[in-house]
Amino acid sequence: MSEISSVLAKIKENKPLVHHITNWVTIYDCANITRAIGALPVMAHAKEEVEEMVLIASALVLNIGTLTPKLVESMILAGKKANEKGIPVVLDAVGVGATKLRTDKAKELMEKVKIDILKGNSSEIGTLAGAEAETKGVEAISLKGDPKEIAKALAKSSSSTVVMTGKEDIVSDGERIFIVKNGHDLMGSIVGTGCMVASVIGSFAAVEKDYAKAASYALSSFGIAGEIAAPKSTGPGTFKEKFYDAVYNLNEIQLNEMQKIEETK
Image 1: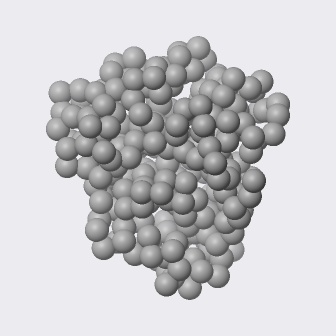
Image 2 (image 1 turned 60 degrees about the vertical axis):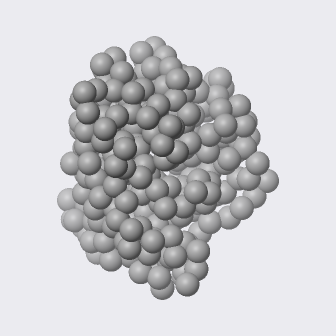
């Protein structure tokens, strides 16, 4: 059994609880994809309970897609408790660079909570790295500079594993760089795939403590499911249905034969 399929098997066997404080637009999809990959989702946002929920979780996923200052208060409480417990914290920096509030609050989270895996598209990660970047809503428009070097530098300066999603996904822990080339164009035709992959990353990180590998395996598995679903689909609606089934049914042969993960410098 390859390492990637071994980690997926561990998710299905252990069924880790992944605590989300996430995006209201995609919360339903995040819960479903977490369940489809084999983990257990819980969506708990109230500051009165987030610390208690973290105590029974194996990973925490924070997503600022539908940001409010009060939600960030809950994220900080949950994140600090996750740090104390020693479970991974994933931050999906949705829309950073589009408004001052999003950029400031993402930076505040990074200052007050140890973020183990920082995920965003090229402009979101570029903004947090101090590069010249443009975000339109939650879409990446432009990034000036070498994406691999930007991801690596931010990983070093933040002591986080950085995930930069795009046509090819980049993962760096500040030393290593992994390029993940799995995926299909139809994945961009439905809302929420970025949020969903953060949930899958959280599921993998819950059972694999090498977070760069965990993120790479999650991205590859997610992309492979997209590649499997696309030929059976006639548009976004049927694709989403087939995609969920492909995630649920991922097997060792598919992962071993279809994974496209390259380690580079």
